Amino acid sequence: MSKYNIAIVGGTGIVGLELLKVLEERKFPVNELRLFASAGSSGSSLKFKGSRFKVQELRRDGFKDIDIAFFAVDSRISKKCAPLAIQNRAIVIDKSNAFRMDKDVPLVVPEVNPDAIKRHKGIIASPNCSTIPLVMVLKPLHDYFRVKRVIVSTYQSVSGAGLKAIQQMEKQIKSKIPSSQFSIRNWYAFNAIPQIDSFGSDDYTAEESKMIRESLKILNDYSIKITTTCVRIPVYCGHSESVNIETDKPITVATVRRLLGKTKGIKVMDNPQEGIYPMPIDVAGKDDVYVGRIRKDPTVKNGINLWIVSDNLRKGAALNAVQIAESLIF
Ligand SMILES: NC(=O)c1ccc[n+]([C@@H]2O[C@H](COP(=O)([O-])OP(=O)(O)OC[C@H]3O[C@@H](n4cnc5c(N)ncnc54)[C@H](OP(=O)(O)O)[C@@H]3O)[C@@H](O)[C@H]2O)c1
Image (tube, rainbow, N blue to C red; front, side):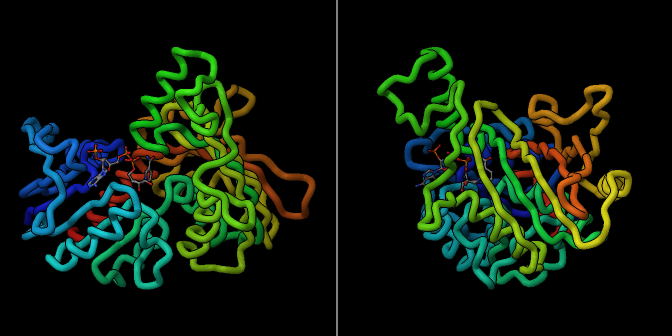
């Protein structure tokens, strides 16, 4: 089997570290591994398959002979450095927001729109960590019932804001009351913050707008109406979403359970009478997108409510990126 030269830009971040784990677990055929981060991490090392690999500061010539470059950095760095990787004929799989809405860049969830990968011109974008589980669930329902309108409220974990945010929350938990050391908008502990990313002129946050625009691009149907509210809550890992779905055709709970139950990458965990439903605490570390609390919405003609939980670092980030890479090579 061929082996590939792999670079991870942002290898020391929370997504970069998960990428290393997923590549190892899934036995991705790695020949050479190059890890890049900021100058501050240069000289440190990270473990992969029992060996230690040096972390380097990203250089212009860093992508020579690289086949696949995973970018797990801020979108400004992706914008600046992904072109360097492409000039060296590497294929870029980008976890940031830098290229997602670019019409020449496929935005891919392999279970939902695998064919889009074939249209890449050097960059493939992996969607936002809340968009991925949403479209995984919407796709089979849209194919069967035709989804007309979706109302989503998210409950997003602190790991979604990166490694530093986790460290901040741990300090906050210890100090218990808000201190001037942190802005109140970054006070994760014991809080629910209805702002993820900055506000646009329409008073939606960038996270909310991203979820809407990305979902429509992936589902390739701009007739679906989607509205979102994104909230950060003090959970370490695992994003939850409360989703109300209105469809064109009559929808039943039994058919929703059956359709989702046979969809690859989704697990239905739904027995309310026994108190069974997914929660971040059991879903963290797992690959599947979990769905529960499936119930009829009696206030509209054809509607249901459901609850989605998925690990934002795995399917929401690293796993989806590695699955994209697997589609390129297998
Ligand atoms: N966290 C999630 O759940 C999640 C999910 C989906 C997508 N994403 C996206 O994935 C990307 C990474 O997020 P994260 O949560 O992993 O953030 P993070 O934990 O803050 O990690 C950021 C990474 O970027 C590196 N970096 C910073 N400045 C750099 C520079 N000038 N050159 C090269 N590397 C540099 C950091 O290196 P140092 O350690 O040296 O500072 C670190 O490895 C972001 O675009 C984010 O939006 C995150």
